[in-house]
Every structure is written in C-alpha cells, then in structure tokens.
Length: 131
Image 1: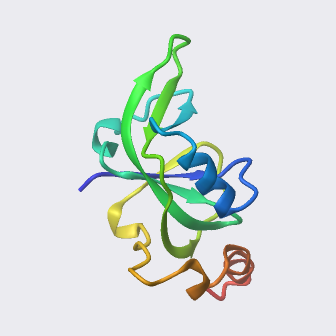
Image 2 (image 1 turned 90 degrees about the vertical axis):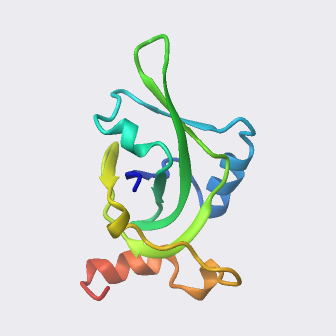
C-alpha cells in the first residue's frame, strides 16, 4: 500500500478555493518542500491529504517528486481534490506521513461534504474532546 502525507491547505480560503487552484494546474499541481521525504518512493501512488480548519477535507494523488535547480523538491499532484469523510487533524508545520489505515475514506457516490459535519465544527468539537 502506498504511503500518504498530510499538509495544511495554506492560503486556501475554503475547500472550494483549494479545488479551483488544483484544477487550474492541468499538468499537475506543484507543492514545494525543502527536503525530500525519506520514504518518498513509498508515496508515489499515495495521496496528499489536505488539512483545512483543523480537519482533513480531501486528498490529491501524488504523481512524482522532482528536484528543482535550487535543491528544493516539487511534489507533483494530480490536479483534483477528492473529498473524504472529514476527520479532525491538528495543524502542523510542513508535512507528516499518514498510513493508509489512518486515512479517512473517500466520500461515496452521491455523498456530499454537506452530508458530514463542516471542518470548522469538527475542529471545535475536537478541541472539546467530543469527536
């Protein structure tokens, strides 16, 4: 099973703005990181799970890792946001590994994000220890 990672959807105003940004990159969205993840080979075919307002809201499949001229690394993602069942997740700097067994399932056909609690509410409930 491929390995996944989590990252904050920095500068995203909403899940919809994140979706629009991803879809505007037809050759694949590029995330930049200073260091190549040690387990990068396991991550090809995995996903980057996005954190928005203290909750995992969606994922973008990882296509490749490419080194830039300045020594940093690009993480090339498929230009789409696959919605998942929202799950609380604390904010963190950079990225973190996420095993498949700990990843939230994708929303099924006919399910919409509105069928589950909004990310902000999940974040508040998580702070209270209720989810």
